[in-house]
Image (cartoon, rainbow, N blue to C red; front, side, top):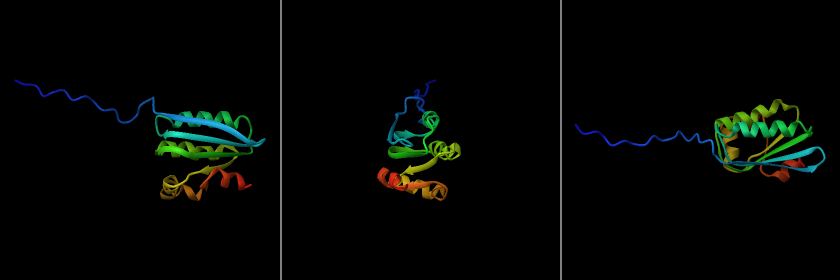
Length: 125
């Protein structure tokens, strides 16, 4: 009786080593830019949420979330971004190109303030 060759299992793409890079800069005393790069998905959304909580604890008036460095945006990433609406800060999202399309397809462009560039988001007041 011959056995079928063993096929290695594939991960469902949920690696804990999924790259996500988050950095903060302060263009003014009460405005922070949270730059996000890499993949924003189930494996990394919690890291974004934690970084956002730490940032909000410093009491900025406005937070610009710059997603221009995001290569992949999954539903968990969208949930993390929309959860930030309850933080009490003015939230502006930079979502250029195909990222803007994701927000439009999910109708989140109706509840979030979206901009094409960080400069546009900062100039909004």
